Image 1 (cartoon, rainbow, N blue to C red):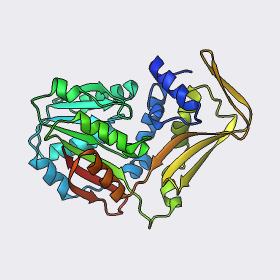
Image 2: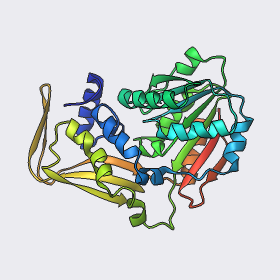
Image 3: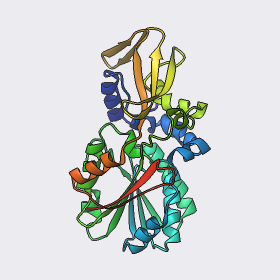
Image 4: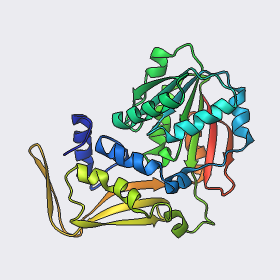
Length: 304
């Protein structure tokens, strides 16, 4: 294995390899962080996550008495920068901005960019795997501050278990904390071919298959397949082996044969009601939901 950030990541991704699956979070760590960073600045990627925000967002932000943001899944800072611009337009005085991410490499890129653009805000890194655990950061270090947590882009659609992630974030917040969740939602009036247009390019495919190369798979010894899975309502990238490949890690080996398939990318388009139910189930109180004009992206405004 090459290019991961630590031994723990290598061990975890190896356990998933046995299931012929690599969670998308590994497409953002180590070497993959820089491939994703390149993708995140393409017009196609921007169209895939863009929300034409309405006046409610500004109204909501203007009503908040907060000076601290906890950006969960901050990535390379592209979405964070757009959100901070919204905060500035609302004349909110943000003093502390915590960039929380599973990827050490990506969050360092994020903070470096944001510090240059917003020198008057204090940015700090919080390493947090939202798929596996809650964070005690707020209770430990920010017990007396009102905090707004945000999960931007379609990060929630890229995780293994949506409910677990929402619960981990809820259990990390304190009573009174606010939460904004951005989600790509399913619009039955848009054909799947139209959805795939923004993904069908070489930069995206490189990013979606980078984790395969990091675990030792020669992607020249097979073919990728990009498609929309209607059963899971998700954009999917699978890799199909055209020859036998043996991977080793320590004393263990995994053998892939011709025709075997391994999944390296999945991004869901969820139903608005499904997200609403999951938020309510784990304890979040939903104040409002707004959608863009195309009904492809929604913002959920919540409170603990």
